[in-house]
Amino acid sequence: MTGVRPRALDHVGLRVSDMDRSLRFYCEGLGLALLRRSDKGPGAASAVLRIGSQEMNLFSDPDFSAPQAGGHPAGMDHFCVEVGNESVEDLMAGLARAGIAVAKGPTRRRDGVSLFVSDPDGVRVELIVKDQAVVTRH
Image 1 (cartoon, rainbow, N blue to C red):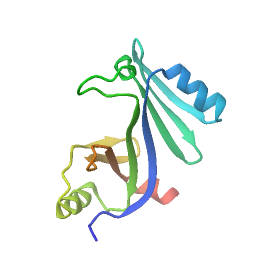
Image 2 (image 1 turned 120 degrees about the horizontal axis):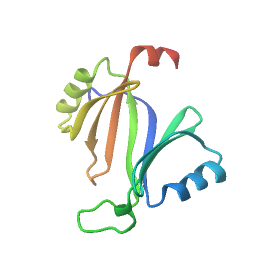
Image 3 (image 1 turned 180 degrees about the vertical axis):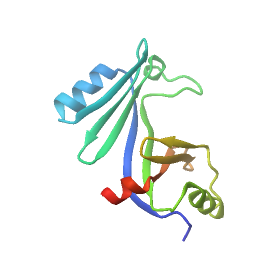
Image 4 (image 1 turned 135 degrees about the horizontal axis):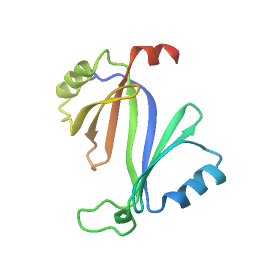
């Protein structure tokens, strides 16, 4: 057993080719709630949707619609697992013991500190250590 202690799936991130079309599908079609949207330029945006007590993140970019060599097609961006480690340093030590390299981070989020690792097929996995005030509310 490694020093990583999974607690819950926190959120999933999807790459989408058309934000408006995807929001219609997920919000109007499936009944998910739009929490926030951020437009970053022509065709580029991100949105956070609520699914029960979890979130789903959507990311759109004009380049996602036409996969190119080394590009990022529409589809899975990442998924996030909440871990029960005491700190991000404790998490990083557990990952090191397991031989798993940190690909990005750690980064401060609104509700904790997260970092990214990659699975053997290149899927990005975000691991988040929630702030204690957030954890005690669950």
